[in-house]
Image (cartoon, rainbow, N blue to C red; front, side):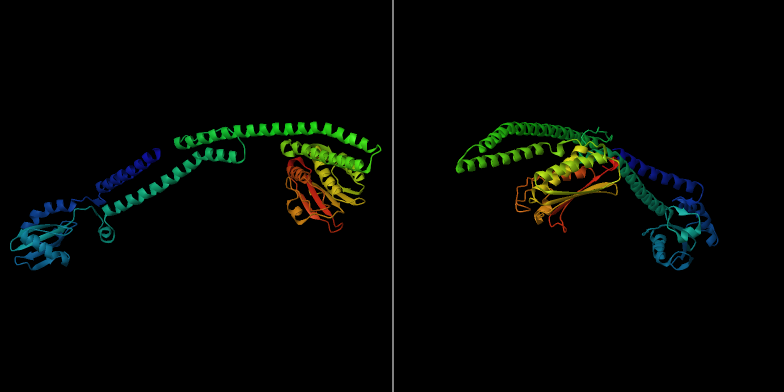
Length: 444
């Protein structure tokens, strides 16, 4: 409504202003009023009628004239030829047609007919001759001024609407970025505020839904973790007793059955451990970096990797090149991520095989490269190996892979501003995994 009223007011102001300016020009004499010629004709009427001879200087301004004899012969004048027939009709029959007005003055044995128009005219003869009439010019200027005013006010209105829509854009952007804690600010425009109110209701409903979903997810993870830990106790007892039973005197068939029990118990323990790792997924953990002594971190990873290589009867080659005394990382997550890669390599490398681990610090980041002498990644594993729950039984040594370790490593690397890359090593013929972590907290 404000826009409509301002627009109407502006258009009315342009019209009134044009009329005032036009009247000012008339008052100062730059423009003759519409009845100027007619009033001058009335003043000169008696002079023309009684004059011995009509001359051009007797003709009032803004008028053209023609003098007819009694029988209609043109004696003199400056009226255009196409208008003289109408002028004679006025003189002889007192009727006229066309766009002009006529005034016939009867004299002895002749008629004087004056042609004029009831429109404002310029005082300047040059302007009357070469320029459009002031009334038409003023109409054109009013139309152009009105169009310009519509454009200017519409542009201004558009900018104001854009500013008023900013709270709406901010609300949408916050929801897009999953920020549901922002405070709604209103625009002052009824329609936009109603939309903002609806968005705020949606925000609150979405926030409540996400919080409930998060709580359910947390409860589910806690229950799964508790259940996994509860399973470990009786499973350990089953495995321990089976191993004790295997040490007694058994028949071949009994020994074979005990071996099946032990191997199945080991596999179930592996499943339980993977389930526990899943419930402790980094997606549900806080990513808190801390200042870490680089040497301590390297020693910890090297020690765990050496122990793991010993369990699998593998040779470990360790090479490290770094300069920073301290780095900012999430210590436990980095250790787990690297060890997941080392364990993945150990599980897929045959006995007496080799695992090469190299550490390089370069361009503000630390990169761990793990190579093994196994069968390498399949084409599908190279494309999807870091996806959660990806299993590729045909790759590497054929052992089962649960799709958690590399996914966890990738997630940790990305949270540290780095990345993980899978490839097949040209030197060893096995798999190669490079994982990168930014060392600077500002870059995490």
